[in-house]
Each structure stands twice: as structure tokens, then as C-alpha cells.
Image (cartoon, rainbow, N blue to C red; front, side, top):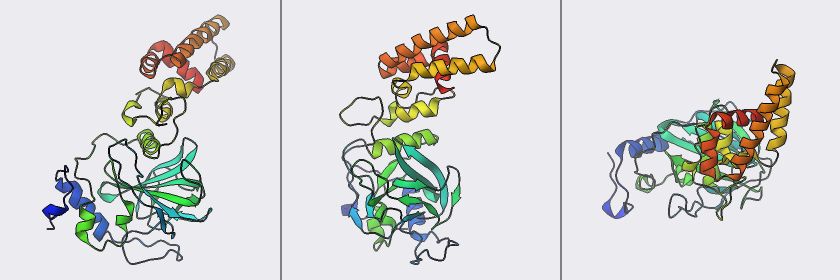
Length: 308
């Protein structure tokens, strides 16, 4: 059993043996899974650098959960370069967040690696990948990222830590003391939650939401709406999700119902009128009030028409 000398313990962190020692076991002893692609370099350790470039912007721990910082490491990469999975795992997110492309892979031991600001994504959510498998290509742009780097992130539970500690740890105590000791968040993972986390951590713009920071607290995004909940949660605000063309969407939804159902014209007119009223209210109200209206029967019908 390894221990952390008192002078190396981060102040204010409490020991959580399960997370700490599970993370250490995975990082240090994980056996590499060889890819079928013979060109993938095998450096003899469990984790593979997703691109070969040097670190041009290192990890910077934020002062608080939503404070400034750099929750990952930027690795130099020529646009169009293949991005490879750092280790075996399951793709827990693959897609767009605020117009930028990202992939997240969940690994054994509660570890998640994320590959951000991609030009293309070639995997899908739920897909199993092996160490060295290509997950996308570099070249995407975003806030403070000009297309010449890959942003690599590493989380233990829900806490971001320096991803470069995965590669060639020379001192076990240096690896251990970087692992957060807080109890893990036991809430069920979902693609919507992963999208919100990426949006918050990378300070991606949130459509329709005002604020100097350009992003919102992820805890405020779980609307719990049926049917279109994940889509609304990605924006963190019902009014923002509806956007400026919601009225046109309502009309198109009513036209679809007219063409595919036997509803009377009078009933469709009433439905259209009430939906416009509900949409107008949700767009004008504050986020909390709009979310409450969205949970009413009228609000849900209006949102369903927009989704249609």
C-alpha cells in the first residue's frame, strides 16, 4: 500500500481510498490493448498520447468549480491529423457542443478522457473503442483554440485533473496527489449531462443565455422535460432553445399534423393559437419561469409542435 507524505497532501482535500487507489491502479497497471493498426506507436505503457505534438498550453487547475483555469492540455497537432483513443473504453459522448466537435471516452476506474475541438468525429455514443483507435481528426476551432491543437481532458469522477499524468509517470506519489479525493458524484450519467459539462468546462457560448462568463452552471440545466429534454438541456434555457424562429416551427408542426391526422381545422386553429401564446411566454420569461411553464400541458404541447 502506498501513502502520501503529509507535506505532499493538498490542503483541504480529504482521503477517499476507493477513488484514489482505483485511479492509481488503472493509470499505472492498466495493460495496453494493441490496436489492429500497426502504425500506432506502442511505448510500452498503458496510455497512449492521442497525438504526437508537444504540450503548448498545460493544465491549469481552476480556483473553484466554475472559476477560470484550463481544464485540460492543448497538444500541438497539424489540422487533419488522426486523434486516437488514449486507452480502451466506451464512447460516452460524440458530437457537437455549441458548434464545436468533441468525443468523450469512459474508461475503467471512473476515468474519462475528452478530445475537444475536432474537425471530424468518426465514432458514435455507446461504441466500444480500443487503445489507438481513431476517434476523429484535428483542426476544429473554438474559444482560444485556433485549429492547430487538440484539447485533451481527463476527469476522475467529475473532477478535472492534469491529463499528462497519464503518460510516463516517473514518481507514483506525484501521480497520486493529483487525483481528487472528493466523493464521486453518484448521479446517473447522460449524454445531455456530458454535453453540459463540456460546454461549461471549455467556456463554450450558450445560445440565448446572457451573462459575462458566456456559460451557465451545469446544475441549472436539468429541466427534466419529456421528449425534447436533452435538446433543451444542451442550451440550459427553454427560451434560448426556442430561438427566434419558434413561431415558424409551430406553424410547420401544425401543418404536419394537418397533413397526417384527421384533426378538424377548428381544433388545429385552436392548437396553433394556444401554442403561439405559450411559446411567446416561454421566450419572454426568465429561465426558471419559462421552465415551469414548459412543464404545463400547454407548454409541453407547444414544445412538441416546435420539435415536430
